[in-house]
Image (cartoon, rainbow, N blue to C red; front, side, top):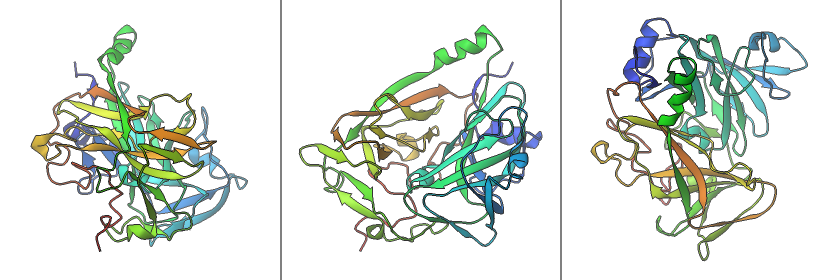
Length: 351
């Protein structure tokens, strides 16, 4: 019997060859060590509001509702998705999963770090970002820019899918969760990152071109922060980039997802993007000393965040097989990162 756990690059490619993922061939580096980047298709729909299709209903059916869809955008040459608006785009990839494989999606790191909120939706969905075992159908992504308007073209990779092979149904499947381990991550508000403690996004900045790598002046979009006495006041509705105090290591036989540590706290949200592929932070793959970058949004009331305060948890899961390569082995913008903005921006202080 095939081993349960997170599918790795070889498993994903084998699944695609068997028809489990269509729209191959994959683009360069689209298959990550333990996840699959998903590509935006040629159109997007401006929605009046977010929605879930619900049992027995397809997303395509809901998009015929003129009360829901305001207009359609052509992404083949690029279109600006504006702050405060909600969009839905069909993804290039379509999946046909076996009954023992399920999926979970997250925004990619570069997407979360520019405060673009994405959620994957499937036909019949009652929850976002979840692809049920045995699902056969199209994939869609909801895109909601929160701080910066963004220029998006077809083929853009805004989100990624992690596939998990389940144990047998019943008690064996329940016991699979016993293999999960968790660690707590706290926030680093020292000034060890070149005298900085973090960044706060500027309101009313220019458009971020998501295909323009290393092409934006960070000073036009971000305000540098230095915490006083190891504390920082989070203002409601503002978006911050901070770093974890702990170094993060994802060994070659595990993958990890960042999750809220205590949703009931309510004063801030500590992440958007949450997948860590095997090899992140591993010395042999050039990742020694790597931190987790925290995408933080203040909620409801001003909140004092303290150095060393718990901010998120990292949930580790075993892999179904050994990955063919480790994260960062062939180069990565985020391997060995500390406090770092998304790849769309030049390094802080580059001039």
